[in-house]
Image (cartoon, rainbow, N blue to C red; front, top):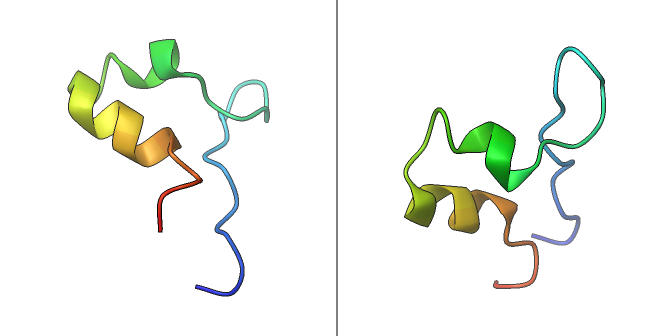
Length: 40
């Protein structure tokens, strides 16, 4: 991708979601993959 996708936003705060917030929905491995913006 030429442009990185926008970060996931918390609908309540409209700020980027943290690993802790995503931990309730996804397993740890998927949280790390979702928040990793450096690996191609």
